Length: 365
Image (cartoon, rainbow, N blue to C red):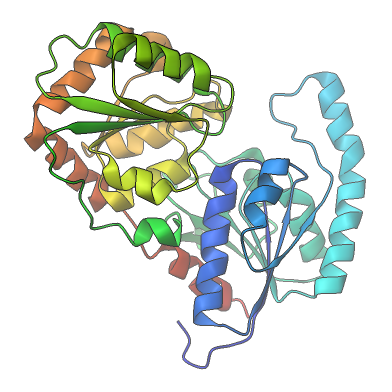
């Protein structure tokens, strides 16, 4: 980082899922660590979950109106287009008042009007793409911005090469702090199940049936830690209780670092931020990509880690509970294979991702 500790006014924009929020917040925290006099503002959606997350951080936040276009019906598309001018005007007002030195967009429909307004005001802008398949907003903004930070190599050549910077995907500080810690050697295997912030139901059903009905060949004692999402917590808890399986269940875990630290094996969706966290921690994973993800990007994300042997992919619509159980039991019964997968995951980690993004931001000042 620069030695003279510049004072930067950085405006971050994005949101809609934790996968968009957490990398942006990690980058903002890194800027404030390196340049303590800097000012940060986050412009996001009006979702309650976004506001709840942002309230925990020591910088200003604003929200603007907006609707996504991807996958919408004709009335939904018309509504989104009608809202866009208002979003653009809201963005202009925020930018003129905050007067940022640069704007960093991290994806999601709210990014587009803010970045477009910034470029109209001649404010430098860059975007960060977390996924292996770029989202619609970032694809459209690629030709407006000064730089494009990516988490994974742009093998498809979607973005202009002269703007690309391979930074990695920032993870939260509390995750980085446990990167070298191993689960306690209790003799009991802990399986962590993460459904993600959307689409957890299919994964919950698949995992519960696999574990409660097809685990007879498992030679090791095990327990479950299962993040179910809001709707399935009672159903999942009941299934484990009826099967006599030791399990900790919750809609969402606030202390993800503490949960990760206990995990010997992870079953998860394949969101980019979760994968970046698993990679930094070196956790072997069975990945069940969300089948309704835009452009099937979760499957592409998973393939990036599976190619090197860090993860196993089990597609939800092609996998039976018995097949998932076989994959899990094999990994539980073979600690050397789990350890090897963990090492492969860690080889793809970029713990310096937040610093890389901030360095790129500072290069535009």
